Image (spheres, rainbow, N blue to C red):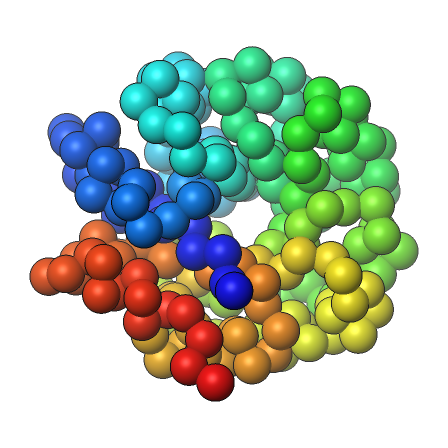
Length: 212
């Protein structure tokens, strides 16, 4: 069964706890997008907000670092309550293995993400070290973008290299694009606007589950 990870990027930040509680009965993970205005053009939240989120929920905190020098922020985000820290290959390149090992040294899960223009071949030697590979199906930095199916095909490539690795798809996920990702072998789906803009959140989340 696919792991649905609602992205709080699409939540109401004036009522963040309320919006977390709205999805809490239907999911086990919560996706937290951290952006620094450098690695990606947008700025979102940091360690203090993650710490506050941890106080109001028992959901698994799936923290996606879209930032430069992610290795410098692993301990603060772990201490804030992150259960999984995913960083971008494009932010570290040759230091990828070291960053993965640093995350795992804190006894939490380590995720590795790639942007749409980065081929799977660039990370094939690192996949075996990670717990999760996040495939961006939009350009990172903003919510509500159009899904790129060519990027979703990377899910199948990754699964062919390592069938047991968790693969997460993030970007433009809705009831239709979710099925595309699942058919390629995705284990987890990140959805923001599709869930939080839905009239019925429970139904929206159910519609992301496999239909085959």
